[in-house]
Image 1 (cartoon, rainbow, N blue to C red):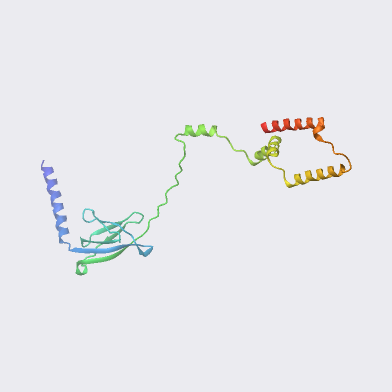
Image 2 (cartoon, rainbow, N blue to C red):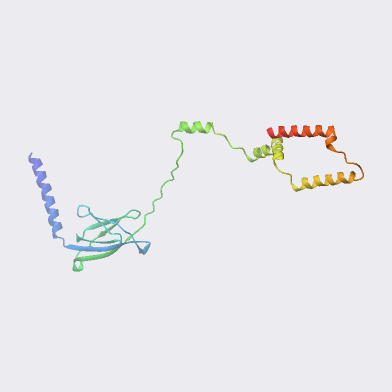
Length: 212
């Protein structure tokens, strides 16, 4: 019990001594503005100012970087802000007119974060399942083979209109046929049973190509 009393008395004496020593220090009006060290024209607003020597008492600069408060001589003040390195300032002793004005230049702090990749799979088992069932895309050679296959060319030929060369060839054949038959009677295809058979065959073939 006596040991506890002695410890309590020692703590009270240490606290009273520290308070007495701090009371002996003169008060100082601490004023200043916080700037960006990269450019003296850029203000750093809302900087947190912590008085380490006085129970971590906290002050905050305004949106223009201006601050002004009362502290003691030889107090250590720490300036901190997001994206800047912390900076400590010690109030000098024997200040003129009991005031101290300063410009604080905060150095920017660049933090390189590691790359973070987001995957659509919740577990490795889901990834393995999707990977095994994944359909691999065809390469250029396989695509060329599919596009040049007989069925692909037939489908393209049945849907695309004739180009200029095909039309010119058809006109030339028609003109040649007219020259050959210019001195003879041109048979009427409506009276030719072979022509009717060829027409029916063409219509049937056309229906099959369209169904394909």
